[in-house]
Length: 497
Image (cartoon, rainbow, N blue to C red; front, side, top):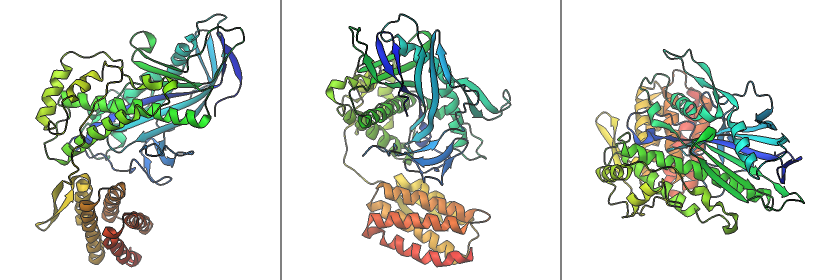
């Protein structure tokens, strides 16, 4: 909640403000083989109250819901454990400027592919200011005060670090959060260092405020303000301020979600393209990672392009999706070479390379990708004893992992065979339907198989997962009826667990 007290700032009267600091992160591990990124929580729709991210927090539903047709905005993991404010005193200051502040939320969002974002929100009220100041000087000072806030982030012990909680200012927290995320989203026994594949993007300070012009003032507080700072104390930080005086709280909330998501989406897309240029991401053509990368480039660029026109024309927020970073020499040429080596030339139109390079410097320029005919590509999976099945590449890893785990389980042979049958049936459904429900079922059968392979399988966990599979299969319709039948056959056998 934003505070309701009023405070004079320069020539204007400002109400309490909501300030959100976002740390966008690009998780590139989906585009690289054998990184073993954990598939729980099941982003973009984790099970609220059940799943959690290690060292971060539990999955929850957004109290007021997300936005229709905006994936990954309706659920989050609380991030109180990842961004700790042990020494926060409830005040922030910069020079003579001073605010009271309370932490409203700390959250982790992800879309299950490359986009991840940590967000921390503060409700603030101004309590001290200079006698004279420029109209928008308060915004720079506010950003400096917020980014100077000290937080502590869990880190692993290394040769030069004893581990524990790493103290950091918000201004420098992005890389530490990315490193922590790489560690906590892979198995404990996985020795390979994947931190270079989890890339921190450009931080954003988003300020939502209500400003009422003082009677003697001659100017006007802008409805929208956006700036990327390339020097000084705010170097490498983007600041967006939205004056919500003349709009409803519902519209303000929708615009906040949109603007924060747009920034994170662009940062993830830019980091992915940069990784392609530098050979950090180099999937084999035709591999599951290659198709996942192609799908992400298509969907992300389509999202950015279609969202650009969704804002009211008089709000001036079109600038929010402009990028002001300096172009790097040779970047376009390197991208040209890498895209063609990856074999994407049949999928991208002639303007892709121009737009991909221009996204760094051209206002409003965005990557555009032709929409090819949808083709379901299957991958052959070894299920043991010389047998194989085919499954769509989008769920192939889940199916393969399920059979691998079931091979190691010590369950009753009849129950084990039924679980294998269920996995095969989900793969068959995936050939005809690649909806989110099918991907959810594929995640569930993998989780079920891992539970079956555990030393002490839990009956309640089996029951819950099977119920989820049945609900998803019912939603899909007739082609998933064999899945429902197999779930019904498995349930009576759980009594033996």
